[in-house]
Image 1 (cartoon, one colour):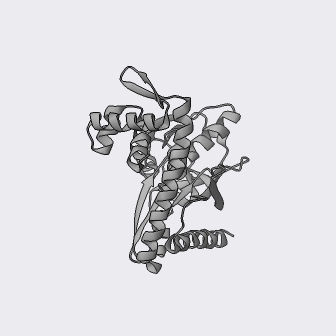
Image 2 (cartoon, rainbow, N blue to C red; image 1 turned 135 degrees about the vertical axis):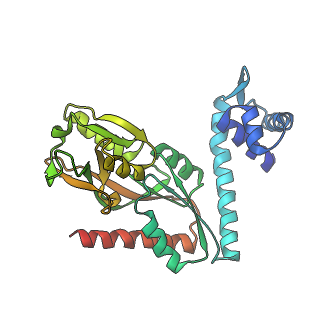
Image 3 (cartoon, rainbow, N blue to C red; image 1 turned 90 degrees about the vertical axis):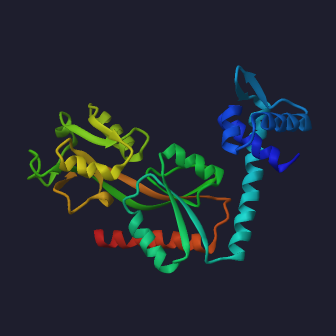
Length: 295
């Protein structure tokens, strides 16, 4: 069994389509098919059921996929470890976030300590984040909501109140707080289903007997402030994402304590470099200082 066969097998297993997998790997379809065929011959079983032009993992394939992912994960961690040992002050931190509002401040603090470390940040839904964490493709994720998984470490770093953002000309703009039931007839702007804050709010409103009416659903939380300012609708905005410069009034939520938990996540088995450990310290210190200023 060769390493190349495992890489090719993973690509086909994830896309379940030879054409797509070949395009991703930059190889010909015939070369890919032959490599998969050789792997199946080595193992003595078929790993896929052929359904038209698609390939579907069968029971043998599903079991082997778990082992192959684990084997390649460990090899990738070994590579990262050696890379860090050979040049500890250089490298790239792979980060995933479900909300990027606090990230600029955290990265600014970290850059002061490790100016040569680069970043690659991805805005992800909760499901995308879990997938990348389990594959070991990101160092850390800042997530709301927290994620409970056997192989993922989850440290809650901040309890973030959700506020109601209204334009300054709105009927509620002179209020300091509002109950959720008063908002049942409002038009909302928000992120799509699958983002933590949206799912949390929808659930709370549903328990109160109504479903918020969204006139805009996007995947850029930062844009919501502009839409509220333009009087397109009102929005639920976490306190960490409030923009004091905008022509917006932020109201507390009465009676129901609506908060999101922000968690720092990492894979329990992923190699953590000294730079990555330092990043974790910066995140924890940042939120500790926010907690102190809140009280």
